[in-house]
Length: 281
Ligand code: IPD
Ligand code: CA
Ligand code: CA
Image 1 (tube, rainbow, N blue to C red):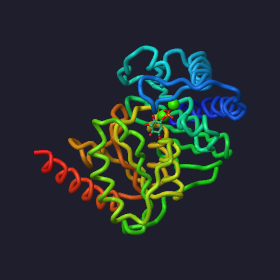
Image 2: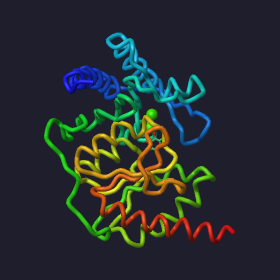
Image 3: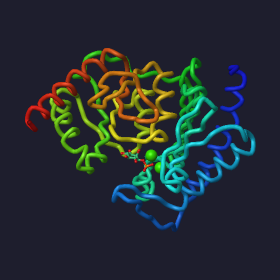
């Protein structure tokens, strides 16, 4: 696929995301529903934004595939990622923030081509922040180039550990053991409630590390391109694949400002996992 074509996709998608941003920004008087899990919220705006984005992109690119959070929920299963250009869409990431009017939620659109992440667009309409990246062409915040923070010692890093999934019993111990190691070493801990923005904050140096286990493709696709293009390092953090390559279809991962910092934290995660497993025996 030519770079020219990818730039064309990017331009089309950015305009659509900006339009969708206006809808989200003006949202009012809506009801909040819960999916199966108490923490999994959805509003009419999540559905509306996803429908518009998919409909408009499909109109222009009928041969492309789509993986959207809400259509996946309706279908009841996650589609397989193919080699076709595939738009991976989270219509509102940080819905729990959105419903509380905490201005830390966004629209997130990523694209894979031959299973490779090639572009990412994340818009926080409440703070007018548009994060973008095209593979090989750098990452931007409102068209200004951004980079991860230059930092090498984990004692100087701020760790955004997305803890909400620790509410699920299957993840709780994994998170808590790891948290106790990280909290003893990092300069500070955050837990902000939007994976896509969490990744963008690493990309622009407003936090240093982002981690979450148990997410879905749409939470991570766009933000991962943006972090990588800002100079960051992304790797798997699942117990079985600790430190290996990030898998967009099973996003258990850490995004760090560079590989050194990631490696230091991976050592802590490994220690935590070993401690937990030995106690469970
Ligand atoms: C959620 C956010 C949150 C993460 C949740 C996700 P949603 O996405 O990314 O940070 O902790 O697990 O589900 O539901 O607001 O799109
Ligand atoms: Ca999400
Ligand atoms: Ca969502």
